[in-house]
Image (tube, rainbow, N blue to C red; front, top):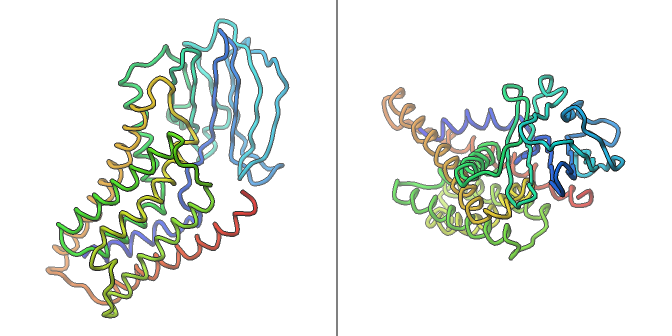
Length: 332
C-alpha cells in the first residue's frame, strides 16, 4: 500500500533537517551598458568567515571598476561589484572555480540591457555559463519550466505536504479534487505575490507551511482513531486553504531568480507549469509504487502501524521545522 511506500520515503527525506532548500550559489549579471555589468555573487556560507570555496572566473581582460562589497545574509555571503568586459560577455564563457569539488549547483541569471534575460543552472557536468543573444519564447519556456520542476522536487516540505494529503485521501475522485484544489490555490498566491499584489514576509510563511504539514499529519491520526473531521471528509478544502500558503513559498523561491522583464507572464506561467509537472511526477511515483506493493503483498495489506508510523514521522519532522523556523524569525 501507499502508506508502506511513504514509510520508506520518509526514511530517505527525513535525513536533511532543513527543508525547502532552494539555495544553490547564485550569480546575477545586470548589463548596464555595452560590456559593463553589475555583478551579484551569492554563495552558501556557515558564517561570515566560512564561505564555500567557489567563485566565478570571468573572461580574460575583465576589469573590476568598483571595489567588492561583501555582506553575510541568511546563510550566504553576498558580494557586489561592477565589472567591464571588453567586447561584452556574448559567446565568452564564465567558469566556476571549485564547482567540481562541491555538491552545490550554480544558478546564473543574465539581465540584458534590452530587458531580456538568460537563466541557466550549472553543475560539474555543465561547469560554465556562456551568454547568448536575446532569447526567444522557447528559451523562457524551457528555463522556467525546469526551474519549477526542480523547485517542487527539491522542496521537501512541499512534498511531505502532498504525501500527507495522499495518505489522508481515500478514492481516486477525491484525490483528483484534492490535488486540483491545491494546484488552484497555490497558483493564485504564486501569481499575486510574484506580481507584487501580495507582500508577505518569508519566515512566517515558511513556519506556517511547516504547521500545515503537522496539521494534516494529526488529522491522519485522528481519522485512524475513529474521529473523522472536516479534513478527512473534505480534504480538498484543507488542500485549498493551505495551498494558498504554499503558493507564497513558491513565490519566495521564484523571487530568488526573478522574472525576465519582457516575458513576465510567460515565465510565471511556465514556472507554475513546472511546479505542477513535478507535483504530478511525485504523486505518480507514489501511486505506481503503491500498485507494485499491492502486487508483491498479494492484496491490500495495511496494518495499523503502516498508517501511524508515517503520520508520526511526518508530524515529528514538521514539528521540528515549526520550532526551527519560528526561532529563525530573529535572524531573518
